[in-house]
Length: 164
Image (tube, one colour):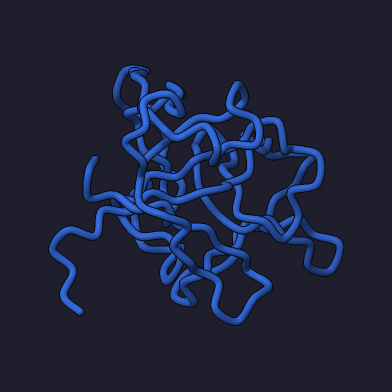
């Protein structure tokens, strides 16, 4: 965990990724939040095949707007590159489900969790990848099993081994 940085991003800015700060070692500010060992797919949505397993991860409480409604989960896949990468840990606020449009969300879609941008295109709800190699997933709210689990608010990325 010592090599992880906290990254914040806004899709509306030209330079959407900025480092907030390295994780602090001030134990007074740390809070335990749920960390789901099953990852969310950044690619084609996949169902969870392994048993539901949960542990906790320590995060500085100053990073969390709603700590009691925040969970962490790993990203698996490349559909959200260049903003989210395989192995990133995302912090998801499940209390922010009211206005998730044009935000990166963790969504349940047809029995699978996925991480995508939620958009409306021609009155159709879509789960959109940032990687242009993936087509948007159209959501039929009447037929599909769909809900937003939460909005991605922060990213923890291991930068050990990066060459600059």
